Image (cartoon, rainbow, N blue to C red; front, side, top):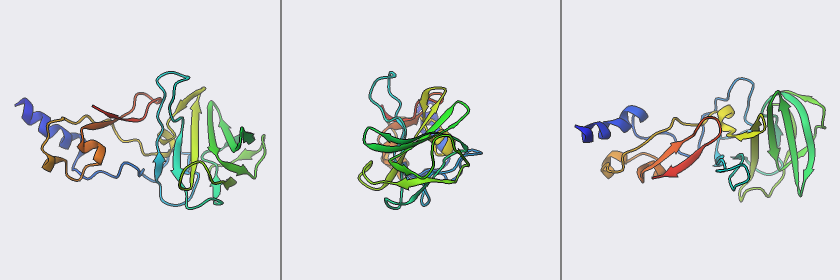
Length: 196
């Protein structure tokens, strides 16, 4: 009986096998938010919260872009908090309440203190952050980094898969799911692919 329940559980949680590819995200964003670049909604590298505030992690999401030089838009409405260079990279941060949304490497066409609306062009994408053109979007909520996909859409529900499913039952699932991994996030702080 327990084995039967474990065999059916993934189908109940996932629906049918063949969920969207791990690197794609739904085009629907939260109210007041928009993707910062036009084109397909592809996450090149997802948010990976560090174990501690100063540990390694990826404090944002790298979103695919068609090419360097494309227009980058404000992900949300607010006030330009910062527009300039940090170390060797052009950065733009927009503040709305306790949320800071930062894009890089983006040469600004706005200045600190300006009001911007979601979807308004705020800069031009520069090359160099990813192997392929991408914009890095980081979001901080009350000083803590959170996954931008909480606002842009794209975080899938947490799914635990049994390790003993026959290969035929996992056909069509993402590679990570098929090898016994689970997509999880804890509160608004963690989004990671975790293998068991």
